[in-house]
Length: 138
Length: 109
Image (cartoon, rainbow over all chains, first blue to last red; front, side, top):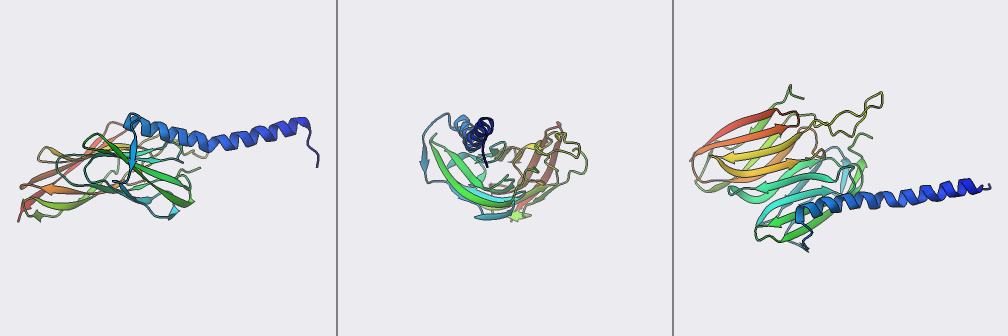
């Protein structure tokens, strides 16, 4: 099997696009986080993100976040076409800065939780979820 | 989707003053993500509930901003403090401008 110059170029271009794709998705997720934190540093710990290791159906993945002392928690799914998932803002009557919900995941990816603490600092946690069937209808 | 939206909320009927209670909410809604395509290949426009709030006697418990990545029939579970007898008000805001709400009274045991 011989490759012409044109085919070789096309192959190289395809490979380049493929390697760029995940990078682009991550950049969108980072933008979403930066918009939330204003570019501030994030500490590890202080946030607990509970998600299944393997989700059979990406259409409903149960997740739970908890961050004692947080004012708000942002959830980001780095591998989704739109990385934003939800933002929880806790009021004075929230007994615990925790919530659970069900989310859609397009494929195997990292789910990231960023908590904004009452003192203005930020903390981060992430969990990798393996998805057998994607949840974005493609 | 403004038809067939039905909120369901589970709140205990009574609580001790200052007690933390767990609230579960579910609302039936398609949550069309705007990513799917129909048979002709046209994108189905996004139609989701974009915000959910829970208040007790006018004070905020939780305010959730939702994106298309929230599953069909959005479900939330969270904890609230009950300082006195009163009423929980749950409100959902739809993309199309509709607002769905439901109220649950609670008494001090």
